[in-house]
Length: 529
Ligand SMILES: Cc1cc2nc3c(=O)[nH]c(=O)nc-3n(C[C@H](O)[C@H](O)[C@H](O)COP(=O)(O)OP(=O)(O)OC[C@H]3O[C@@H](n4cnc5c(N)ncnc54)[C@H](O)[C@@H]3O)c2cc1C
Image (cartoon, rainbow, N blue to C red):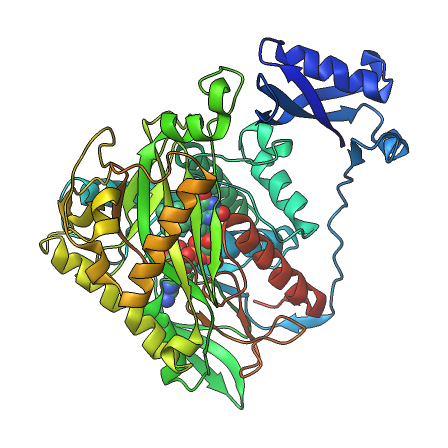
C-alpha cells in the first residue's frame, strides 16, 4: 500500500480533491489504481484559516509495482504486507492444545492453531456472546453483577464492550495479519487504511462470533462456562488442567486469561509459580462534551463534516510517575466494568458511529512494583481496595462515585453538573474522589488534569465529570517466559496476552496470541487424539 501524506487543502475542498492530488503526486493513471482512500485527516490551524491535512492510501492492481514508489517523494511511503511465515515442528502431541481464555489473545492463538490442523480446545469461564450481552445489559439496568459474565469475562474478552480501537504502538509485522483476519470476518473495510482504525462494540461482536465459528469449523472446540482452576503436572511438566467442569489431559496450555483473572493468578501462585509485579495505572474516567473536545482540537474547523470525531492522547511526567489519558472513546459512554462483587470499576466503550454526545477517557497515574514491595499480591490488593472504596462511596449498589472537575481541583466533593451529563449506566453519586486514592496519587491526578487544559483548551472545564475508579488499565503482574514463549517454570505452559504481562490492547493481545501459537507450531507437527 502506498501512503501519500501531507496533502493540505482548504476546508471547502471536496475529499475527492485529496485523492486526485495523491494520484498526481504519484503520477499515476486511474486505470492502474485498485483503490484510493483517505487514511487520515487532521487540522492545521496554526497559520490563519485552518486547513485540512490528508493522508491518502493507494493500492495498485499490480501489487508488485507498489515498491517502485518508495521514496519517489518525501511525502510518499510504501508499506508492504508480508505473508505470515510459519515453521512447522515434528513432535507429536498426545492431546489437543488447550487455550484458556477467549479474549483477543486466546481467539487469535486458537485460530492459527486451528488453521494449521491442531484442533485446539478452548476454555472460557464466561458464556457465549449472546448470553454475555444479556448479562451485561441486565447489570447495566440494575441487576446484581454476574462474576463470570460481565465487561471483563465471557466470549471476546475484555475488549468486546469497547471502542474497538485498533491502534497499537508495537509495530509488529503480525499486526497486518490481525487486520486481515478482522477484515475476513466482517470488520469495516476502512480499518485497512485508517491511521487510527476503530471497529465499535456493535460490529466487533459479530467479528468475534465469526472467528470463533471458523475455529469450530476447523475442528476446534470451545467450552463456555468452563473455568481453569488448577494445573496438573507430572515430572516437572504439564500433563493436564483442572477445570470447573472436571479434568482435561493436555501437554500444552496457552494461558490467555486477561488482566482481571485474579483468582487464576492466585491459583498460579498457590501452585508455586512466581508472578512478578509490572507497572500499571489507576485513576478516573473523564467525560467532556465531544463538541468541546473538537473545539479544542480543531478550533475554527470544529464541526466541519469532513473531520473525524476528535480524539486525544495527553501525558505528562512528574518525577518518576506519569499522568496520562488512556483508552479515549469519542462519542462513547462510561461503562461499569467490575468483575468482582463489591467493587466499582469504570471503563469506556463506543459504537461504530461514535455518535454519542460525550467523549470519555481514563486519566490515570502510573504505579509499579516499588509501590508494593515487589509483591504481586499487594499490587492486586491495591486495585481491589480502590474498587471496594469506590463501591462504598457510591452507596454500595454499583452506583459510581463521581465529582466534577472544578470541585475535584478544590477537593469539595461536589457534582456540579453543567453541560456534561454522566453516561455511566448504573448512575453516579457525588463524592470526594481525591479521598479514594493515596494522597500523592490524588494530587498528581489534579496536577495532570490542570496541565492537560494547557495542551487541549477546554479540557479543564469545571463541568467535566470524573467517574471512578479506573483500575484495570493493564495487568499488575507478569508470568515470565523464555525465548520460545514458554513459561520458564513449567514446561508446556505458555503465558500469553495481557494477563501474563505481554500485551496492552486488542491488537497487541491478538499479536501475542499469534506469536505464542507460532512458537507451538514450530515445535509440534500433529496431535494424536
Ligand atoms: C471496556 C473496555 C474497553 C476497552 N477498549 C479497548 C479499545 O478500544 N482498544 C484496545 O486496544 N483495547 C481496549 N481495551 C483493552 C483490551 O480489551 C484488552 O487489552 C484485551 O482484551 C486483552 O486481551 P487478552 O486476550 O489478553 O485478555 P482478555 O480480553 O481479558 O481475555 C481474557 C479471557 O480469559 C477468560 N478467563 C479469565 N480467567 C479464566 C479462567 N480461569 N478460565 C477460563 N477463562 C478465563 C476471560 O473470561 C476473558 O474472556 C478495553 C478493555 C475494556 C475492559
